[in-house]
Length: 415
Image 1 (spheres, rainbow, N blue to C red):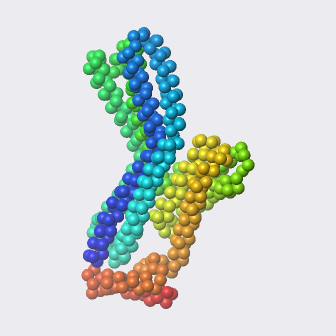
Image 2 (image 1 turned 90 degrees about the horizontal axis):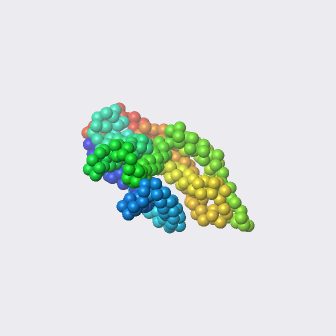
Image 3 (image 1 turned 135 degrees about the vertical axis):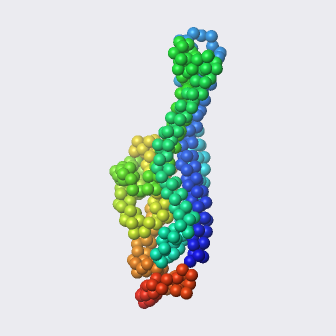
């Protein structure tokens, strides 16, 4: 029993860094998806501040003329900046796509290690708790309890991330206003509120532009990141009303190709497949929920969340850029994404079949031999349980040992 407790704690200690690395890598991957938006906001803000500072320090015009020049120059420069950024957006998208894939690969690898170690912990803890000392065992397996507590905390912090980012936005705005108020007090001998009522239009215009150029990008960036992370939490929980509404939205979505030339058979086939993915998403979701009620398989849940995210990202891109009618030649560039979605769905079907097949295994209705799929596994589990529950062993229990032997004899007849 002592050795089993040590084993559970060691497995939990090994699983914890994998969980943390997987979480951090997924947070970074989702944040990197917002990098193009962040860069645009930062570039535009920097341009506006530079123009405002230049006009303020280098023009001798009156306030009205300076304001007119400022607005005109800003409009021209921002338009040019947006055009330049749009030209390089495809390059940026490709770059961030590969970087995001790198972090996603780290997440997939480390999360699979975590799932494997966590499942081993759960199996060992279940066996350990069969002698009725579940409370004492939980206290003894502190690292196992800590692992599950951190996992729970991560999901709930992600769930609150949108609200926390909004609160952080208000805090940043307040800090900027306080800082600027201190600077106006030093420069003009009055706080920011009095300075804005002073009547110096050029200075007031500069101060307002500076404040907006700092506050607005910070607010937009934080709220967009918070929203992205909260969407991940919704995926992880899979039981919220928002999640079901999102599934219903995808269910009703249909992609339509705009044929400006002779349609390609492969593209038409992929269009039909993509619409099949959206049209059957609700049925697949219900099947996943039913299977997870049989066994809370975290690997299947993770695969489902990845599939749902990739499908929704592709649909969002088509809707935002092409308003559901995507040109034939543009859709052909996305065929690899549709093929990948098809492979993901096939993996989901395979995972569902495996769980249903295991559920039909008579060993899964037992207490001591759940998960055993062959005579070799049955015998191996029996030997382990004999060491743990034999009355002569430390922590052994006569009644538990007898019940375990009865189950072993019954299952041995089947296998």
